[in-house]
Amino acid sequence: VLECAALAEPGFRMDPERLAACRQRQQSLINHATRRSWLDFFEANAEFHELLAGASGNRFMLKAVQEQNRLRRISDLSDYPLVNVERLRESCQEHLAMLDAIERGRPKEAALLMRAHLQGASDILEKRVAGKLGC
Image 1 (cartoon, rainbow, N blue to C red):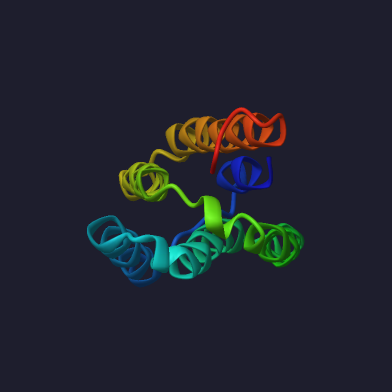
Image 2 (cartoon, rainbow, N blue to C red):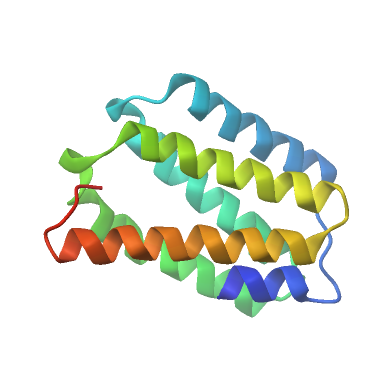
């Protein structure tokens, strides 16, 4: 919800250098993803979501996403044995699609992609909690 709202903020401005660095990190994870890269993925994922919140120009959105990432780090560590490398790659590809939309000046498209991305993650978590799926 926060990132979708961040993309809709009138002051949303993405630093091209930070976008390029984020893109490079996401692509590197796609190319080199392994179970051992889970922590790298977590950090890159947190960086991506914080980048979007920060680009909103709204410090409260950024602080909320940072806190969410801090809490997720604790809970996600317990899921490490269940890491699905292909899902890590898919998530990075979804991030790249959002960065593409932002780069094209289409924040509404990026927000729709973000909503689908977050819903997909929520669906996976719901299935895992119900015992129907690994990560």
